[in-house]
Amino acid sequence: MLKQTLFEATHAGADVIRQFFNGTFEVSNKEGVNNLVTEADHAADRIIMETIRRSFPDHYLLTEESGELIMDSSYKWIIDPIDGTVNFANGIPICAVSIGLEHNGTIIMGAVYNPLMNEFFFAERGSGATLNDKQIGVGQKTELIKSCIVTGFPYTYIDTPNGPLQIFEKLIRKGVPVRRLGSAAIDLCWVAAGRFDGFYEHKLNAWDSAAGFLIVEEAGGKVTDFSGNPYSPYQPQLLATNGLIHDELLKAVNGEWM
Figure (cartoon, rainbow, N blue to C red):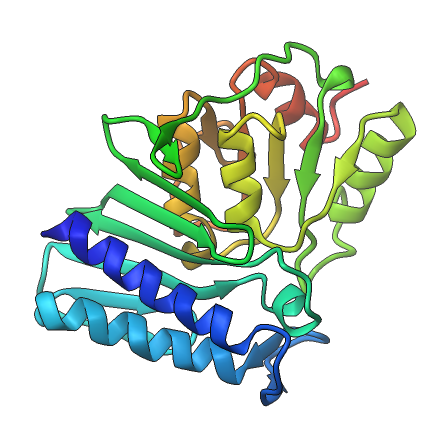
């Protein structure tokens, strides 16, 4: 029932993305420049929450757009109705619904669905990760210099010492290809699928990563914070790799890689 509801809620949100994409909709701004929220974000948020609550009215919900619906439950649904809103608002088809399901403090399932590219990523703890029902696994690059990396830039504290711009510059100057897609959920899934070898970001919220980080782990990858500690979606820093370049990329984000 949990998995079925997760799939139903993810598809319901994706239907909203399809409905509004490249159409006319209201756009407003949250804290920071170009930190957008659209009419579609709110519509997807509503339908996802309604879908989950029909089956599990007593479950805790945490969503980017509605905040927390606190309930006395061991289950928490962590929802980003559209991850990659700036892409979505500009007609760039790199955006997705992202929903993670937590039980007693542990993420047990995650789904990330980009309906515009027809890519549905899913993972259940202990059961591996899939893309459109086919098993996926991380890449096999063993050297950072030969890897393809993806990152994102936060809307705040971008100029902090050894911050996002400095690390990006160092990697680029070394010749490491670094991409920026604009959707952390998709970044994580593409690491899981072996398209990228690593992903790092300085400031994420739980709804950005709750589903994607489990998908990476279940695909055989490694996810930590910038200190190398086990990852929690409730702290801001994330480093996800194929596992083979993890130590090298960890040194790079800490300014220690030569």
